[in-house]
Image (cartoon, one colour):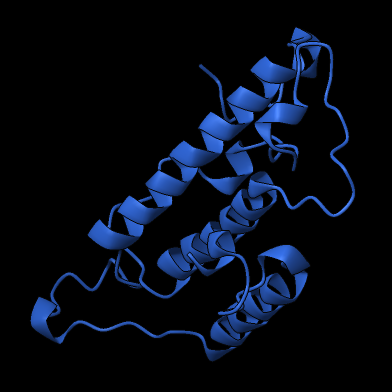
Length: 155
């Protein structure tokens, strides 16, 4: 299906293009969750993906003719969805660098598995903490956690 690829030459109408993007990123998020929970490798590497994030507008603003601009101050669920996609990208880095699937030295096969360990780079952890902080700072204002905000945000 090639949902992970961006094909501008296909000349899809906006509904088809946005549907492809949204379906792909839902599948990508599910893959990341399953990989993190069960210790499986991710199905796609980041280098294999060139699909754009969904346009941050809700369904009612997308027609076959084009994407209409929502009224100012209208928060979009897709804006929140895109923020979640970026959070899942961070989770995939955690799975890859903090909880690796393979031991660091595959040649050390004579090592007792119960005694096996691996080193975690402190600089890598700091790097991911900084990325998480940047993600938090870049959250659209309407979607920042606030216990007194709209039910959609609190939920």
